[in-house]
Image (cartoon, rainbow, N blue to C red; front, top):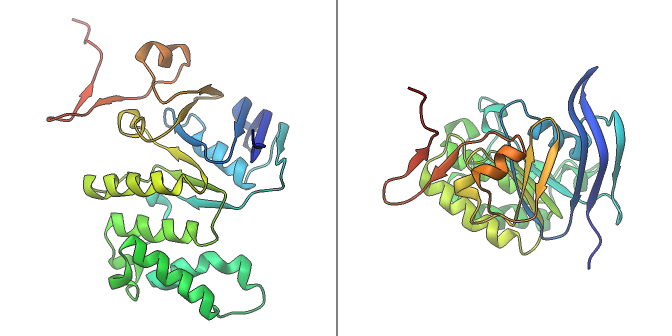
Length: 247
């Protein structure tokens, strides 16, 4: 069995003196596809920031047995400044800044990588447009290309299906299934019904983390994990399953 990319042992973290996550244990292996669910404020994004090295660990350890893996990150679309004056091509290329070092311009090889990714994402026709002119789905594709440009070993996506149409959502999930053949993926989402067919395992995050080694969760399991999320039913008429109202 291959060694894990990252190991979190008894990790407690948060912001300044405020603890958000406590005693988190998690192992992330190559080709894992983890669906991360949980309520707003439960600590999902906080956990990602710890993995990315943005937040410190109050207690516990994060280990990278094979050295720190390359990571690609797709933030929530609400965190993206769409007024920033940058074209799609330059946005994707900016993901190569670690490779560029002291050279301000991309090499021909790097430009080809940018063009190839944009073509795969269907963005070649908007390559010269500023990101403020893109649709929600196109913006997500552009930032996903930026996250992929360095060919990461671990791809992290923070609610990529927010503010996008269902057509893009299904296209994204097909793309992610292909990418999972090359890299591990962590996908944060509120919609367990949509992501459960594509992820392999599920992590419930609500002040701590409960790992479920399958993509199938029942309401009873969610209660045990203290992880209140919506369960969505999909079919000819998509609908949200709610508890009975007290009368």
